[in-house]
Length: 314
Image (cartoon, rainbow, N blue to C red; front, side, top):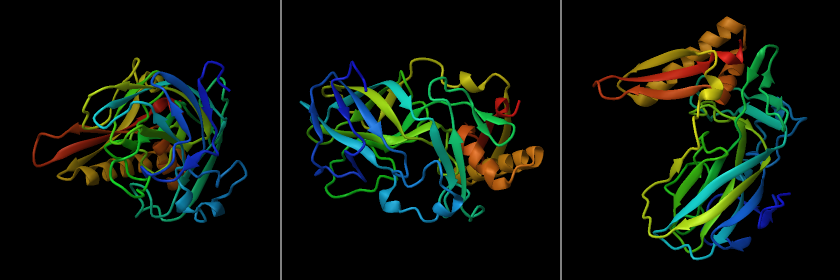
């Protein structure tokens, strides 16, 4: 537990989806530091002994549980909730899956697949993938947000103006996130913690990993944000830059199709070069490869690039 925290919120205090009628599990004054025990995105349905047979049996009604909500005293619509991400306490266990019907290339990878990860939660040394791959780790919370003003229950899967399932890998320790407040108290929740993910999370999962998160919650009165924004504490890609990148591209008039082409080309490259099953290559690139819009002005064609760090195999 966190000795310097004002509160600890246990994983049993979680909910599925967003609903501003959910009762808060804790009231906290601005400036409070809170440790959250976060479940993995399967809500514990997948564990160290799981097999690929468990993937199609997942109950999607129990996907992406978030711990909370926290009522921040004095928070009102129009304010911003300032979330300082102080620390992560990883578990050492994670999983990556290809879930049928989910992911950027779902039409190409229709069968379930599963990789179980084991990593050192203290050193966070790169985690082994197969016989000769090693993926650098960077813990962050994939789902982090506040309750929307719209009444009723809303799915946790799509991200929202008030945050939610953002899956931004740079929401790591040291980052300060600002979220638009739409309801009294903000009703903040966090979960879906990852040990590593590439920009795009292209197969639909990262290294999904339960862990604790220490956050400081504060208010910026009258900020009137339209969307979330954040500030990082320093460089965000240096941990993958040492050996350079392999890069594939997709060129055409549709950004989504360009992204699909760029990822598909990288999957094919890695599968052939390293003798990987294509679905394993697909899951691997989801954990550490980055989609980037390289050009979006030279109509009618745009360029999407996919960067894979060579340090994984070298």
